[in-house]
Image (cartoon, rainbow, N blue to C red; front, side, top):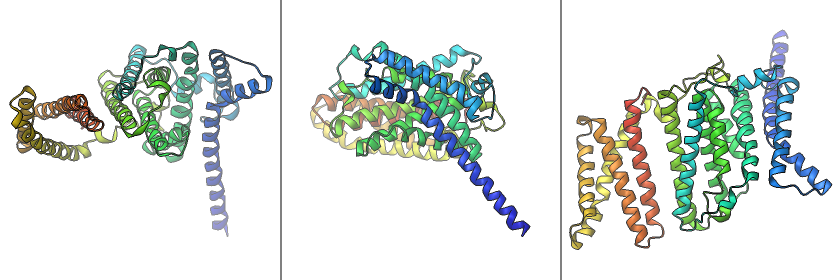
Length: 411
């Protein structure tokens, strides 16, 4: 009888804790947009016409007030009742040592992501420079997602999930899924591609928070990314057809992978590790690395490199045969050299240094991009995109091969 009573009591406790976690996450999601919802209601009811700048200022003030005064003291999420300063510090909003380094890291990540989107837009052939997208209203508007989405998603929600799952990795993935879900705009195929893209961007936001132990770099990255988002895209941010979409998203995804690599290297090499916040508490295991930077994956990485080298060496043979009748050219010599380098690196993989492997991979990347450019000039509508994408992948593989192994990061 007592055992049954105990089990019922435990089940009730579990249900209560699950309700607490779900309630906490739901409240955090709602309060990210509460300022915007209130402003929409007020302007609709009153008939006021406000500029984007004024709307953004009011939204930011409302969201800030709700976050700072409700969550630490009244809602007691996620640390119980604490002071505002303690709440912000433990979430990762504080002045870390080497603040300049954290800010520069955020700027660097934003530059890479924006450059990726800009290149994707340019290669669609429809990009037009339009400075009208850079307005005061846009810069003020982006303060809300840049600051409060980081606080709520990479702070409150991530910490709640860490307590729920008792596992940083699971908490990260669930938080990224929630973040991407909140950005769904439709249910067409392109909307699911956009969902994946937002999830990948959300991963970079989360990864920099975890690795730097503060939200400062992520806030700077998020704010700049959103501020210049429409400036680096085609007019209206409308991509029509397979070619346009494939081109844009290929460059965007490549940029996100490069950002993950930058975070992994810079936070270790430059010592950008915050001294406060929940990421240094006992509840968080700080050993989390990007999944493909762990020692157990090094053999898989080696096999992948070998097969990539073999595939690259074989794939250029038809191109060599096709080019032979037209005579010898610099491009032809470069392709022959690449084929030989690939096959040699594949055969003697275990006898040559990592530097040679990296050089071979990066030369592959350059050759693929050159071939893509030639294909683009020749009027190709789709083939050149594959070349550019393959070239980017090769270069990223080359960087991973050399930089990661030469650093103190496990590979």
